[in-house]
Image (cartoon, rainbow, N blue to C red; front, top):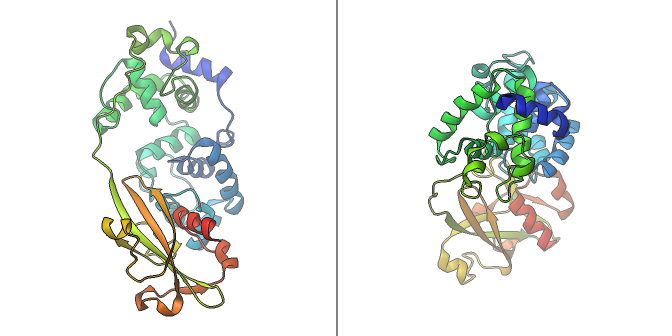
Length: 336
């Protein structure tokens, strides 16, 4: 009877998806793709992958670029710490590593921003390291195949599953196995209405045998999300130029540009009472991983702006030369 690993390999060779980062063993291209695909759908990620690789075709190009250019190339993807970490790790690679990617898991973890998942992905996809690569799709497949109701959003479950998937991949090419597991989770063993009848793992799937495909995987309940309220200000001079400022390198939207803003309370936000006045323009909701940002935008003459709202005065035509967060780009789309 074929092993799980052998079943995955046989299925992938006939049904696997063709994706641009699967056509190479270049660890640089694989690394960039894996980081882009964190928190990004594949359809959107392909566009950004090609754009990023055109702008920074090698790790040397990425390391030599100013951070503002890297953030601009990342604009729209969100989670900008990913771009800052890529830039920092590229400098590591052209420095101590002399432009060569380390091939082993423990060494890859030394790169800025490279965690266990990315280290395993680079190790498997570029260097054929015998390790399983677990993303959200793979967690779902494993939970169902094993018939395991352990919460997949808890670290102890991921650790236990990692040991199991490493056993599954031990006797087959890890690169193809991991591509196959991801594709099965993405195209067959989907969150709702899994296509069990065409799944290569149906005969070994505990959830299918016991009728548990609609109840697995299980996630433990998360804490209630927070909501924070902000007032944003379009500070304009008589010529229509407006103020932008650069955020600190660390923290929310680190290193990106923005228009002046301050956090406020629910009451002022509901009453549309901006501390510094101005005419109300619009309200938006922007979703982060751990909280929801409710923002309101006010237009205010530059002459009436508080001194601590200092920044650079730019015309509308220069927006494309700065790297802004997606939330600020939403504001510009509505106002201009």
